[in-house]
Length: 91
Image (cartoon, rainbow, N blue to C red; front, side, top):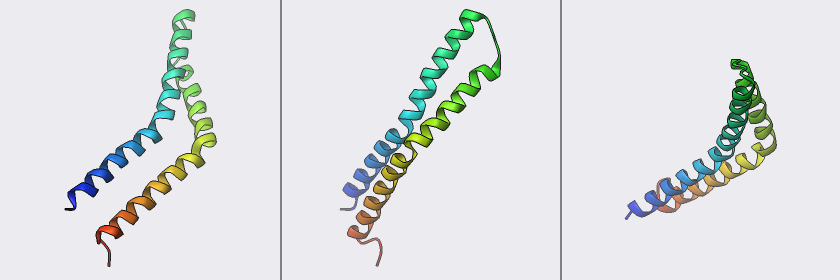
């Protein structure tokens, strides 16, 4: 029965993707909301005003959380490779 480990690996892969994507998406969502509110209040419709704060926030977030995100991805890959070896996928 190989189906059970494959289903568990896919479930874990989706969970890791969610954990990696959620912080940047939430930061961009919050910054976009604040910038849109400011643009609506001041009636300034400048495209770079919406882009640059998001770009700076994502850069700062990746500098701050990048090592922990890489560690999460590395730990998941190690578990996945260990499961493949345990199933017998590699000699």
